[in-house]
Every structure is written in structure tokens, then in C-alpha cells.
Image 1: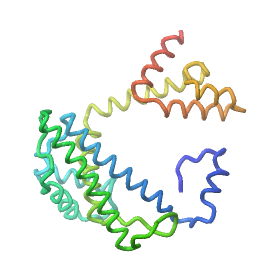
Image 2 (image 1 turned 135 degrees about the vertical axis):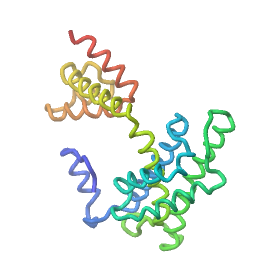
Image 3 (image 1 turned 30 degrees about the vertical axis):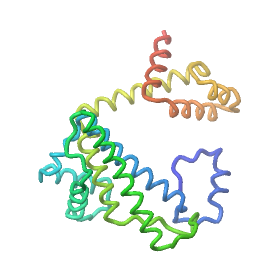
Image 4 (image 1 turned 60 degrees about the horizontal axis):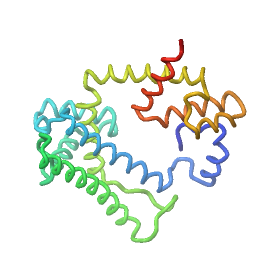
Length: 246
């Protein structure tokens, strides 16, 4: 199960999946998926606090909590999840001694936020490891010999953090304007690279472009080059290429 497999990668993909159950991902992939969930939920929450978009005191207000539950149920937990379970998940986090109840940018606040970040990551990872070991024991785990066990309550805690960041950071009114501008930059950059390549390509991608056997392969190189850019480098390259179009 993999999204976005290129046609020329299919032989390797088929080899990697050879003998694998059709309806299961391997243990390593499950660990990676949970790692992504943990990293994004915690660091998006941290970034939201650091930027001043998330006020922890708002998380006590019932109208705000109802909006968070709606976001979580719409995107991050199975349909039909009881909002009370999400409320209990958030309350468990808020009740921790290390939970950040505010952020003013001071050294103390920064240290407390970093501690909370570490505590959250440790909590989510340790709970999953403990639950998995309780089922499969202390031996080596891998491939299709085990399933990663993440307690439902812990998944809800992670989902609530995602929903908080979504509600207060991703759904800000100005964020849609930012995303719209980013889409324009990416579209124009893709068009400029298509017209000018290999100009604008980094050395590694320039070599791949020169070796590409056809237009399809060359287009893949351009897509990979754009995907490798940071926001700042994408804007810089966009400015450089579009400024010379005339």
C-alpha cells in the first residue's frame, strides 16, 4: 500500500511487496505512520504556541472545545467517535504537570514548551511500545509478524493535538491566502522549469535530467526537484526564473 508509485518504480515496489498480504502494511510502515502522527501533532502544536496562534486557555471554553471535536471527528478519528472521549483525551493532557498553560516568549516559557514537547513525544511513543510489547513480548518484531498496538485513548490524545493545530493554525483566515499564493508560485515555477530546464536545476537533478530517456522521465525530474525545495528556495528560484522570462 503506497501512494504515488511511479511506473518506473513498479518492479521494485512489486519486489518489496512480494508475498505480502494485500490488506496489511508491514510493522515497520506502521511504526513510521505512527511516528509521523506523533511528530506532526506535537510540533504543529508547539509551533502554534510559539507563533502565538494557540492560546492554551481557550482549550477550557466549551464552544472552542466543540469546534475542536468537530475538526477531529471530521479528519483525525473514525466517524462516530464520541466527543466525550476526545474531551477526556484533552483533559488528560491538560492535567499533566508539564502541560504549557501559556507562552510569552520568555526563557522560562521556552524551556517549559520544549519540555512539554519532549514529554508528549515520549508519552505517545512509550504507550505504543508498552502496548505492543504486552501483546507480542520482548522479542524482535518486524514485517508481518506483528501489528503496532496504539491504545485508543492515546490515538485520541494525538488526534486532539492535530485538531487544535488545525483549528487555530491551518484554518486561520489569512492562511488560505498564503496557500493560494503558494499554489501560484509552484505552478509558475513548474511552468518555468519545464520551459527552461536544465536551467534552474540543482547539479544532482541536472544530471538526472540529462540522462532521462523521454519527456515523461524528464518531467519526473522536474517534479522531484520542486519537491526537494524549501519554501524559501522555491520562492528564490521562482523569482530568478520568472524574472528572466521576458
